[in-house]
Length: 385
Image (cartoon, rainbow, N blue to C red; front, side, top):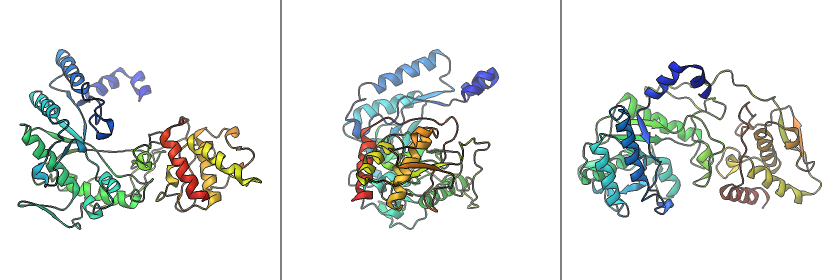
């Protein structure tokens, strides 16, 4: 993108004028943040709006604060009982009315997957759109999927805040394909098939918001450097792999004519070679080297339920070594591990587990972190105990 903007002033101008919204923060009132941004994000929104006004862009570009769906709830009631969370209700009412005054949308991120991931008693069918879940009744309205119920909880919350007609945009929605027992390509395909049929082909909203809703998918590609603190699936939201190749067949029109999306072209890979476990005279040295490799790369697919979780012990060590080797751009010194590793030209992948090859210009490195350390500890317990 930067090269394009440098090479063409015309394209740079077009890039600027395609902006529709300015996101001030992202999900600032998550419960896990413990109120860290309660006193800062609204003043920031006001300042951004003032800047847009002064630049004469307020009619074209709207400032807003993308919210997580946990900013509202319905308690033990149905969606019609929806209201903003009590600890931020006053602030949310101020923000909502500010958005209303400036004709800005309310952007919310809705993830049915997270409801399933966080609650073992959550009915699996309710996360999808095929109508197979046990319906939930709310007065005279029947809900068969979490998306509709969640959206209508927001609608009820906005009504109570005095903004019943505020535009709603779903800023993020998606399904991960790895890193969890429910995170796989089969479930992701099922979710997107239902989402596209509902939102694109049928152009249906929810019972309380029957008009179509603008939706943005999360995500286009995997992000192998993303924090795994929320869960090991966080690096696997992409419809496309790290190298721009599609993971499963889709029909973005929602007509059900699934086919593999067109992948990225002219991807420049490093040579077809892999770093694998060569054996060890002292098996006590394997664990520290596995830990070293995973802390500095990405072993999230090896977690229970992941695509590489069924590898045998030697293969799991090979996977960790290879991830470190590839993220270091196939540096020969990155495939040593005290003499326990070797470079091979035969593809080390299995039918279920991809041993990736690095792509040129993708030479990022992971820093040590608590989330990564926890992952390594879990992997070691899975592999060696």
